[in-house]
Image (cartoon, rainbow, N blue to C red; front, top):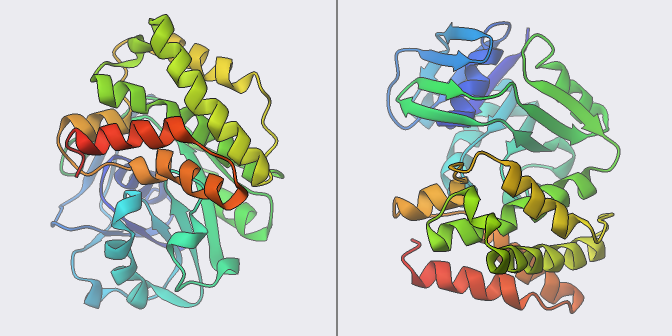
Length: 288
């Protein structure tokens, strides 16, 4: 049994905390008090009563810290690390983008596990979550990655390692970067059926492919067409998180999903004008 702290009580954090609490000692670090967790999963409802902390000063060292906050809230998450991180504690960063390790420079890189997650879930109320699919987790194929994946052995979340995490992360970013078209148009996944919009999506992904390759990822040219096709096959009313946050006038992860392509492209002398332009339009349209 591992001692695990989950930072963030949103849909992802709450779902992971509930599953892990079935077999591990879990502490949930949240902004507001909760009594328990209840998650409606594809295999039935699970309940958990993890330790709930709302004061970082009350945190004590654990074996694993899972950061599930939005990418723009890393400073808030870092406040918890002083109490949670012991000399052997490892930090799993479960966030969008390709800069998981860079977001927590105060933690040694060899104790950070970057995590790719595909876990459709929605928080309907504090501590109440609907999990739409079993979900998957992908981590690097090393000792830390194997240890992290083992935490989920008795859950329905399929956690596995990959020998090429860089490619996996950039492939996920290719999907995420194209989602900005839904946010700007305020249309769900069905927007990909518009031929002109689909071509914009392909352009966004092609820029991601070029920069990703410069960063060491192996990405085929056909990925641009695949992303459009995957979007078309999604539920027509499916809304990605960037769209949901923008529509609700919340801060978005446009930096981690689009502007990162621009920044890293500049490092390699590769322009990404479409990602830059779409991000500028989103920000001008009210992104906080």
